[in-house]
Amino acid sequence: MRHLARKQRFTVSAEALSLFIGWSNVTLQRLGTCTHWAVGIDGRSYQTDQWYNLSSNITASISRRLHVQKDHPISITRAIIESRFPGPTYKYYNNFFPVVSTQQNFDSLGFPTDHPGRSKTDTYYVNRETVLRTHTSAHQADVFRANESEGFLISADVYRRDAIDRSHYPIFHQMEGARVWDRTKVPNGDIAAAVLKDLEALPTHSMKVQDPNPPTHPERNPLQKEHSQAEAQAIAAHLKRSLELVVVEIFSRAKAAAISANPDFVDEPLKVRWIEAYFPFTSPSWELEIFWQGDWLEVLGCGVVKQDIMEKAGLPQQLGWAFGVGLERIAMLLFEIPDIRLFWSKDERFLGQFSGLSENLDSLRRFVPFSKYPACYKDVAFWLRSSSSSAGGGSRANSQDFHENDVMEIVRDIGGDLVEDVSKVDEFAHPKTGRKSLCYRINYRSLERTLTNEEANGYHDQVRKALVEKLGVELR
Ligand code: DAH
Image (cartoon, rainbow, N blue to C red; front, side, top):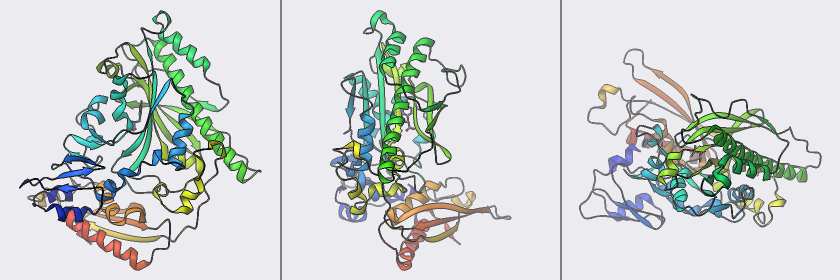
């Protein structure tokens, strides 16, 4: 975030910074005359540098760990998926710390150095080499190296700078899963046969699955040179069945919940499809989509683990599959939760609806929305600086270095969970000067009460000021 990068030009006292950050779990120390400070994140101290772009809303939420809070819908969703991957084959890791190195988050997985995911506009940086993990895959290589089981599940909070709407939040939760087989341990070293035997032991299901593509494709979804076609095919089949069974599990529980609320409930037949995909750390790779309320909804990514990752983990003789699934999206389907901000609510009208469920996953109930409060739309229109006038204003937004995520971050910093949605409603270039104008519409709406117009105006004025101060835009 540009405005935070700019702050380091000043030497600021620890007290002033603590006040600025304003949260008890963030502690800052001034280090002599150094213009960079150390930041405490959930009890650990990190040296920042010009890459630092965390905001107070984010650091304050790090300690929440929704995926392990008893009776929280994210935690319930995690437990339901875990039930499809039983121990001791699968070992669960639910307490990995969210601050990781760029090596773990990107390099260990083969992300190229110019991958857009590495940019400061997309990722929260503590310093040049340290980030808030953007996905649970950040821990894959370490868990493979530890080699404690044939399979594992890692559930954790992940962080991304992103749009603001009812299905995007800068913190969400993922579950990473993996299963490997060892050439030196399976009978006759025959991986394909061992995998197919394990596949046979899995239940079958009657869900409709579209899977039109061949298991591998020389250009679009290549077989790895270390694997035989039979091995990749068997691993893909085991992976796909395992994940289809997760979908069946989730939806049969959702259906049971719907029927308990309404005995006449009739659902549409469940439909899923496998799509070819690309990830730097798997090949071949797929995404799974679920047909839900008239649309195909992407729910997870997966594939055959790149052998290079196993080799670097010291396990060249092992091969297998991995997947990553977003827990919010699944929980929203499972409980019919309409807005992702609700997961962060401490309101009993939300949390109370899930009490006792962690202990009894068979008694799921659908979420019953409490009143929907009125929306309050406010627009903000501004000119970006023209690219030629950016000299000396390196931290300012001109048409080239402007990124929408910086607007999102500013709005979120000020409005927090009172902002439901931010969308661009207009964009044009001045016909003579070429200067660009943008207009964003912000919907201020609390999930818990009616916001007064004055209150929304107060936030909106702050947003307008911050856009000028931090991005250097000119309001229209
Ligand atoms: N890390 C990916 C993401 O966040 C998801 C993913 C895809 C994880 C494929 C995997 C995988 O383990 O094999 O989008």
